[in-house]
Image 1 (cartoon, rainbow, N blue to C red):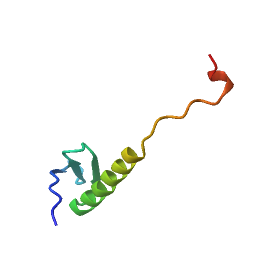
Image 2: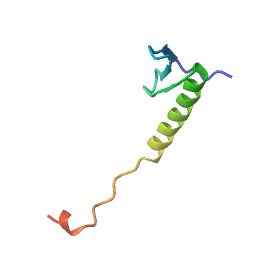
Image 3: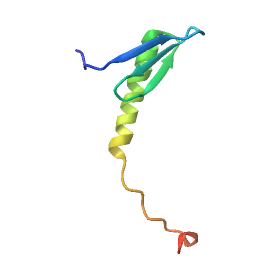
Image 4: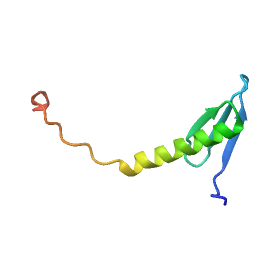
Length: 67
């Protein structure tokens, strides 16, 4: 099943592979194409989870922040 993601794979000079999700800009790498893609999936999921969990920063509760 295709997700419609555009992914760029690059074989680096050292033999490792870089995988870049073009839509999100998230990148990962691995010693093989398969591992680079698996690592990319994990990185994209982690990025999306972090963005969904993002909330307003709490107000500082420390005396040195008093104005």
